[in-house]
Image (cartoon, rainbow, N blue to C red; front, side, top):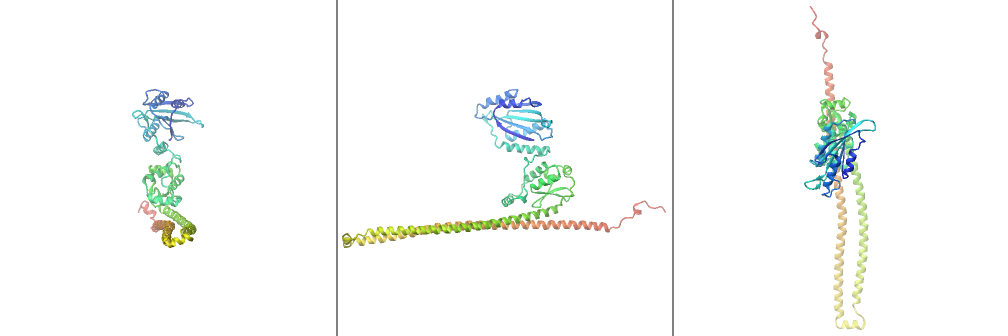
Length: 445
């Protein structure tokens, strides 16, 4: 059942819309929790209550449309409305339920329903929040399709697990970390069943979700995932075995479980090779990028060192010029020599020059340390990349070995079954046929 809902105001317009006579028949089936006995009065009542709050969209309107060709009963509609009410947290709120019968473009008369709730909680005098209402309605709609066995639109189906042959490397790693979710597995089978009407469609829908349809060893339909796990279709799709046989028909054309495992293992080995190639290409790309960045950093640091050396040299020359300027010449200089001031000034200049050299040395060490950290960070980043790529490659190699063993074991099983079948045929052919006289009546003597 398709469910479309939204928060809204405009109760008068909504009442007029629901009571339009363009429908073949309009039936107000329920007015629960209202003082008024008609839609317009009920929605006016809700609006009056909402004035005590800041809520402008004081109603939640829902339309319920059964699948084309399906005749839903009042009970079906009421159960759907009840599910939505619980899902959205509107239990106990005033509610109106209206049925419409309308003739479509093809001339067929169809029946659908509308439900409208008041969002105003009169005890708290605030609007009930309805977060993610569209997603919740989609969940209820999907549940209704499965519950009634209706063919589900593809837009409602969830994929569960996806076909690992279509995974990206990141998706493959994420899927391995996540493990197997039984709810996801069941949802995948149920959705594949709900959107399919034939064996081919069901097999395709299953494979989109990561499962291969096969012929079970006990003459039943099964599906095999990429790990080689076998799932009974009837059990996981939650349908009766006769219904499975009726829809899917003859299973002789399907591969056996062993044959399906061989097919899956080969496909997954190819996928692992693609992943390994992708990692190798990424490693090569990251290596070249690191080399370019290292060369760029080296050139940048060399330029910084040259600039710094020029700055330090200019500063030292300027400081030396200033120190020399403090030494007076002529009569004043002679007087400084006589009273020992020149000697003292020379000593001060020497100490100042040594302090400048120590300062330059400290700055050089700090400058060198900063450049060293920059180079180490670049090297460390590249080391992390290389380590990660090597770890992923090792993991993919192990995964490939798992699928190789799976293929070998499945082929061994398949060959063993073939040989057993041939041996039974040879045994049957060697057994002497019973004579007709022994099977018929005993002749008279």
